[in-house]
Image 1 (cartoon, helix red, strand yellow):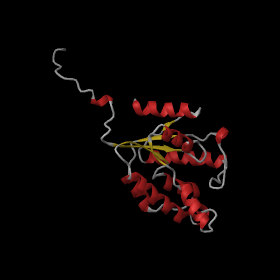
Image 2: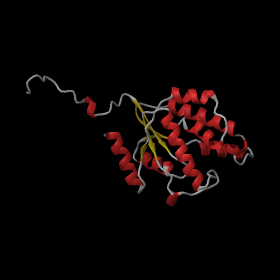
Image 3: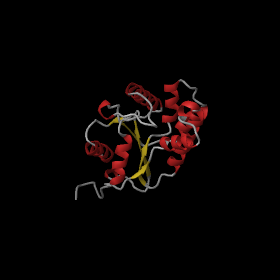
Image 4: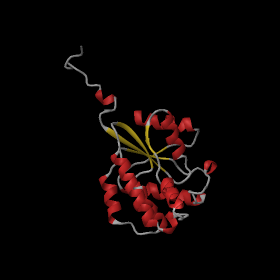
Length: 193
């Protein structure tokens, strides 16, 4: 036994899994967030999926082709409510999110729409533990029925997201481009450091 040391507390080496850890993936459209989230889910990690596609599809079933374009505030209100629900539904241990609450007002910066005060209040009230950025990546970018942005717009959105998250004192960790497994391993190595 070392002199002066009766016990050693190793608890700081292992995350306290009695706590809820909220780990967020952000990035512009088509940067690989959903692919990475799905890969993480295949490794039995708890994920909270992106809900904008669900909101868009529900609106399309009601005859509204692009709710984001037709009524941006209604779209954003639905997103904000859904993301707050996801945040509140975190369970003990690691919770991974495909987009977060601050994404909602950040998109208003992109569109030039005013940002309601309650959006800013929600960003301050609901805080994530770690934020990862998946940067715009032209080689994997594809548009589809729910993703209407051009690649250049996706890059702009990615930049706005970073600036907006930094405004709330987050320091997004950039996940390098690479295979899905490489991206997954990088993310997990950052969490385990």
